[in-house]
Structure formats: structure tokens, C-alpha cells
Length: 169
Image (cartoon, rainbow, N blue to C red):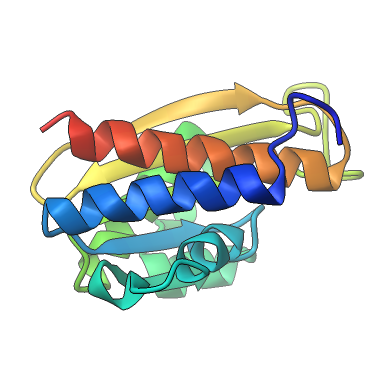
């Protein structure tokens, strides 16, 4: 595996670190995932004892699912598209509204091999994080590699951002 692409062991270690921090600060996590299809939720539920700090995960690929499960505004999708800062922020906010969690992460992107465009090439991923009662933050990533590599990098970045989000307070 390429040095920059997180291995299963690396993702497991990041999930353990994230879980330990969430547990220590009495937080519960919700995930809202598009391009990772539930991989973040899988990574955290691979950790024994995750029921202490993991609430739920939502894999919402279609526009309809983003609207129904996460409350994303149809106009946001129409104007900005699914892979946008605006959509990621509405996804992360909706995940908190529709769960019992206190911390959320949302990901939306283009994992490939198709689906990219000149404006949003394959590897374009928006990740948003939010604590209940706080403001969402979102970051744009441009990952390299095939579908698996883009998704692995997205999971790792999402978990690292959760550590930063929880640690910042």
C-alpha cells in the first residue's frame, strides 16, 4: 500500500484515539456519510466499547436521502451540488438534529473512478464537523489515488478532524 494511503491498522488506531477522546469528554458521535458509504461508522464500531460513545451513522448517497435523513435543503443541492461546503455543513447540522449525539462529522465527495468534472475532479471531498450548540467547520480536500485510496484518506481526515473538534474545547 502507498505510504500516504492509510492502512487498516492506521484507521483502527485513529478510531481508537477518537473513541478514547469522545469517551473521556462524555460525547456521543453521529456520522453522515456519502462518498465513504458508512466506512467511518464501520471504523469506529470496530472498536470494542464503542456503544459508550457512538450514537448512529447515516449513509446518504442520493439527493433524496440527504434531504430526508439529514434535512439538506433541495435548493442547496440544486445551486451548489452534493459535493460542496454548503451541503457538508447542512449534512453535519442535520445529523445532530436527527440524532442523540453531541458531535458530528459529515463527508461528501467524489471517490471515482467516474463522476468527476473540471470544477470537481475525482478526489474532491468536503468534510464538516460540528459540536452540538456550536458552529460547523468544513474543509475541502483533494485526495489522490483510486476509489479505495480516496475513501481511506477521507476516513482518516474525518477522524483526525473529530479529534481536533473535540480537543479544541
